[in-house]
Length: 175
Image (tube, rainbow, N blue to C red):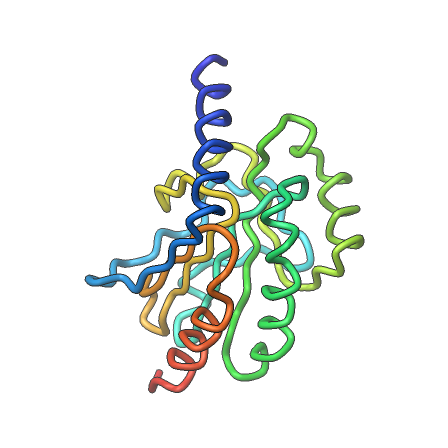
């Protein structure tokens, strides 16, 4: 239990510093994106795999519904989903709880309604996907190219125009 609390405390600390920094980076060496792992529930969608999304651009957004920095990014993520879903973008929210009450599926469902989130959301209560991505931040965006490689990361708020430009660039590439 102590290790779990330590992970949560460190995650919150990193989320604050990442949000302040708003760091973004293109992956110098694209690496294969890890598959979604340990997902307890899929909301707004049947279960997805990255393998099933090959040939599409995938935006993976790590968030949790009480994180103010995450709440501020949600309108951008939702807008990208709406704008680019018919052009080959799949947005997947990976809801990874910071606090125990955020593990509740009904609570997450209420948050999806409140924020108007219509894209697929994976409930990562055990941090399995979080760990597979070696993620340390809320919010965190990972862009995966059509070949299934992580090619861009952004931690924290901001860099919305840069992230959207990267989405457009990836969508324009041949499949």
